[in-house]
Amino acid sequence: MSFSHKKHLGQNFLKDTLIKDRIFLSIPSFAKNLQLVEIGTGLGDLTQRLLDFGRVVTYEIDEDLKAPLKAKFENALKDGSLEIRFENIMDSKDSAIFEGEYFLVANLPYYVATAFILKALRDEKCKGFLVMIQKEVAQKFCAQSGEKEFCALSVLSQSLGSMEYLFDVKASSFEPMPKVDSAVIYFVKTKGLISDLESLLKRAFKSPRKMLFKNLEIDKKELEEIFATLNLSMQIRPHQVSTDTYIKLLNQLQKVGKWKITTKEVT
Ligand code: SAM
Image (cartoon, rainbow, N blue to C red; front, side, top):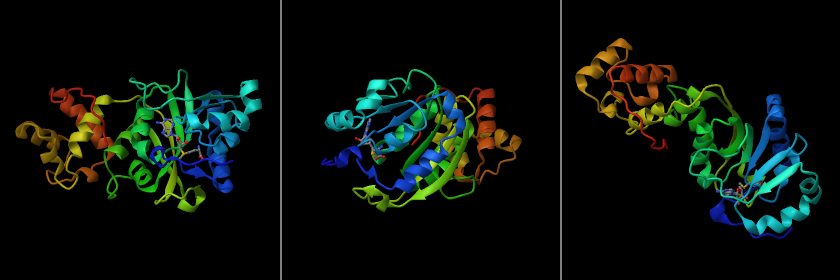
């Protein structure tokens, strides 16, 4: 099939059959009770594999792919096992991606991967995901406290469920080849979103090399007391604090009325 790839849409299509198989085999069995949703249909190579699992709803922004996808999936579209929605997944103002409860599988376009994962984390209907993203971003989402990649993204995802780094994917697995390597991560949501935590983390990691105490920019005396209660050193850096401690810190700050809701994004 001849198709000219659109770089600005992150069109690096997955060609490696073994990687497609590994993604397919990593889909958890609980996803059988949910709708399988794919983001970024592309030429439909991964979609084809996902149809072996169950009914698929897939989203694609590029209308030039309409004709080739229609031809490729004529039968699945007819019998209803596949639905293709030509939409921009970042368009909807609220966080809803799909109307029912769903499990996400995607080879995400790099340019929108972090923002989209945050959207999925916020979306109550999203029960988990298996996504391929740029390796450095995957490391951030999965980092543990004390590791240099540990950041607001790690705390946020770990406070909502379990995030796991599954495997690396070489740039040569794609056509055209991207400049960076990728990785597949797996997330299962076990808790609801605490939106206040997002805003606390944004402040905490504002200057990652500075001390957490300074980054928080809160009345010194009150913060000293809270740090003492939590047994936290005044010299501690944001990446050295565990996810549990961030949650306790938020609770303490809320107790003294020092944390208000904002909806700014964590990046
Ligand atoms: N799933 C295919 C595969 O694995 O080969 C394609 C993956 S490719 C990395 C990402 C796909 O997402 C592209 O087809 C691109 O056009 C589509 N895409 C990019 N931005 C999008 C957006 N905002 N909404 C929906 N689809 C988007």
